[in-house]
Length: 272
Figure 1: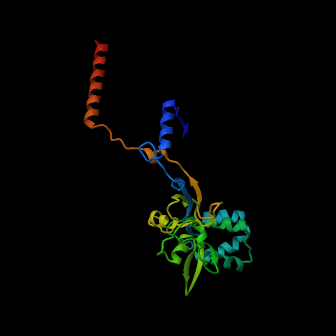
Figure 2: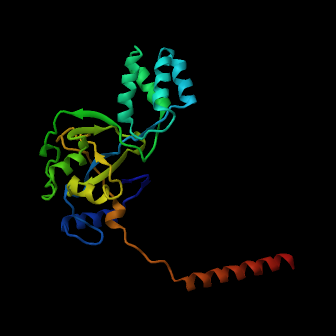
Figure 3: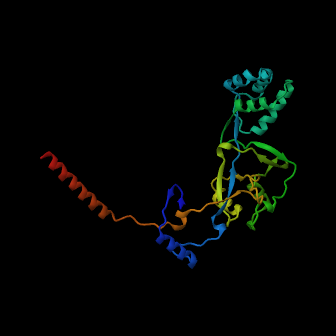
């Protein structure tokens, strides 16, 4: 039968043995019994926020104004007010930039907004996350996103929201709900066994290493609507591999010495 990129020929004797083991239906060294769920997993998408540092530079001005010359006065006003220092909060700077552009009677287009950010920002892991959406309220995360899973009893609603990409941010005396823009360069994927709930896995295997990560909650399975697309994998090595310790080093050294002596003898025969 086909097994990966190799093929195995089954003789009558092997077929007889396989049939006997199948009929016996018992867990032994060469036969294992599993339920279907054992081989299943959910593939979740793990996102991390885009973090941008803003700075007005000569190169950035040249690139932007070549394509959008109508912003000349606005960019000059921005430079006079903001200077050439780097700013680590794009959300705050972008609000100021829009006000200055409005004061100079220029209107943004989708293309000019995109180009402006490309020319005057660069990724910095120490910068503040870029907010992509502000929500009027925080809706409770639906249990339907976790079909057949029992979520940790001690997890708080706010922590669950953050794991699913909805954050509470304090601005002054107000607390607002926001979603961050994901950084495609930091996107990752995790295969979580179907027998384990997604949240427990995330808290144990992901969050301790990347605290700002979240699960993309709209990447769901087409059949059950749960977070993470369901897949199956039968890994023969994982189930049947048995570790065999290497031979003792003394034995290997002895064989190498014997081969070395034999090679020297052959060389002497050639030279004599």
